[in-house]
Image (cartoon, rainbow, N blue to C red; front, top):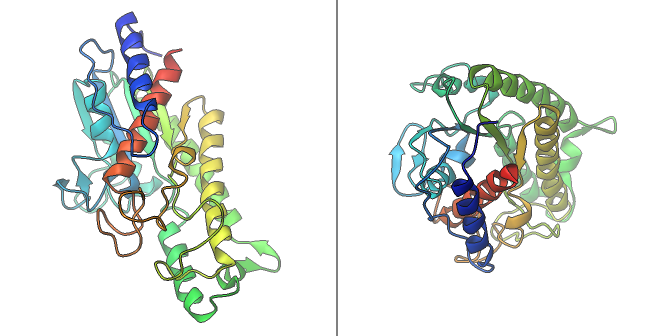
Length: 293
């Protein structure tokens, strides 16, 4: 890991202490560090990193916002140069191949890159498609668990295979990051809460069947567990954005929710809003702080 100044350690501790005081509202990530070891930060990821629908968008093709968690994190630790190449719709394949007009995301890495965050995997297992199917089937059978049943063949959950395939892809990406930026601090960023963690649902907001709501919650938890496992196996950090976002799911009212429902108001539907990205930035800052302990 890169050498870290004592001043940086003390300032990050102060940042964590300040943001920890905020409990009911999304924590802020605005404190700046004047003496930092992070000269080049590269943010890789999909729409949950890019922040589509949150003004102001700096890249319309990728839906990248200037209030997403990479931008907030970079401001909090006074990064010299931020390379935010996150892009809506990105999969692990787009780490090494172009995505429309966007070049391969890993091309942003340099040998001297200090910090890398990676938020990807949801599109590999097609989370948006899973939710869309659950909504469609929920309208037909609101009291059952038709979506779960549709992904179960001969008693086998078909998403297990998707997760295994994606796990291997995450390994490859992390190994490539280490090869290109051998001295960087690398953090895999998980996904924040979407559905209520207690397994309930708000059918009028998102018409998912009663029995599918806890199953869909568990799909996301399985995704995060896989990401955490791959991070550990590859010797990098993992940022848990789920635990801190519990109670701020898409069923909550405006001002409380950090995840927008299908008809998004403060961001693209089924994506974190600005408050959600503030919370994710705080989680990233805390992970950086822990890595310095």
